[in-house]
Every structure is written in C-alpha cells, then in structure tokens.
Length: 71
Image 1 (tube, helix red, strand yellow):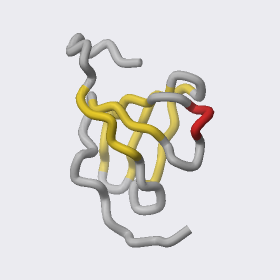
Image 2 (cartoon, one colour):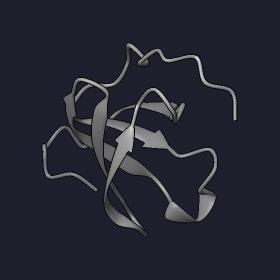
Image 3 (cartoon, one colour):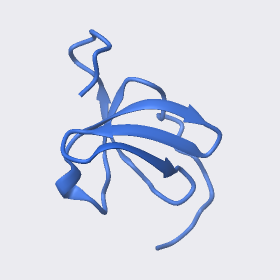
Image 4 (tube, one colour):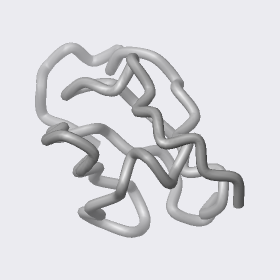
C-alpha cells in the first residue's frame, strides 16, 4: 500500500465512508478525528480506530438522516 501521509480533508464527524480494503465492513460513519486517528463506526465491523495516514477512506457524503444517531 502506498503511503502519502496526508489526512483526507473531508474527514469530520458525521460523514459516511467506506473502507476500500474492507468492503465487508459496510458503510461507516466518522465519529471523531484526533490528529491522524480516525474513529469510524461501521455497519458490520463496529467501531474501528484507523490511521488516516495509512487508510484512504472513500467519502460517501454527509449522513442524510441528519439526526446524529450514526450508523
């Protein structure tokens, strides 16, 4: 995997994402971003803490429910 050591600018709490290397995890919702640490709750994998410098998450957009309840 190529490392570019940048954090995607779209990563903020509430946005929906996919993990391109873990398609079975389903849709995830970003819970928090703390430096390079990104906490995401995925439909089928639960809460995962990822290194945003190592993983390029696929942006799906804001949570259309807008209720803040997460995935």
